[in-house]
Amino acid sequence: MRIAVLNPVASVGKTTVATNLAASLAIADQRVLLIYATPTAVLDETRAQHRHSLSDVLTGKVSFSQALVSTPAIPNLDMVSGDYRLWQFDYHSTQQQQPMLCLERELHKIAASYDFIVIDSPSSLGMLTLNALVAARGVIIPVAPANYVKSEVQQVIQVMAAVRKRYNQELGLLGVLLNNCDHQNQADKSTEQEVQNDFGVQNVFARVIAKSSSVVRAGLLGMPVLLHDAGCVGAQSFLWLAQSLCFSR
Image (cartoon, rainbow, N blue to C red; front, top):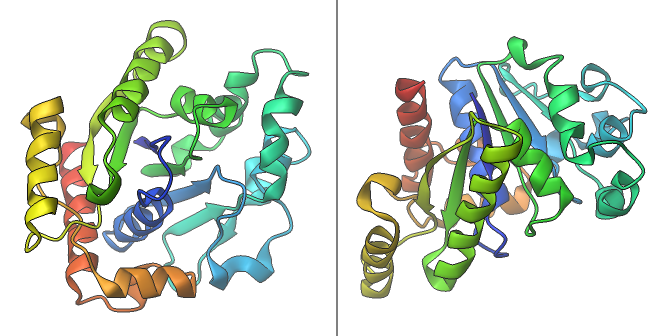
């Protein structure tokens, strides 16, 4: 299964969700590739290993297999880093034929080696995000209660429909995911109900990613929360999400 994690709204936890979901899937004995289709994201423990980034893959300088980096602490997890050059992708992609297919063309060569491919998408609906949607088979839209914007989620769904019609008939919505949510907070509970009313209970994941200081600290340390505090409520939320996706494959 290829999963794009995206929302054009910044600070909803896309990278946190993508990183921790990929790690949780790998720990559940799935072969996982994590792709950071963002200008800066990279796990600190693999930083020194990086010779090539997604930018090199999309511009044809190297293949995916040459850009892959393993994560020693999580044997089933490979990753491809993003870097600052991805800011320029929208400009350089205009020089290519069908630029929205760049990621799909390269992923097609290695997709069979993985059970899950998780794509962390940027906070925009530019060419990188379109590449993610063309390459993905399912989409997770993280929503943070503190800055929920209904129109932005609607915009993602509309763009998905356009991509599905023209480029990728297999693309579907896996669900809207309430992230960094505190059920002890009445405002967060109200936002969860609002999201369910706006998009239908069937289109919202049944369980939220619980607010957790351990998740925040792990992110600052550049690692999945499972390697920092596997027993915390946030880590358990991501394990639940991974298990639910495994069962629905």
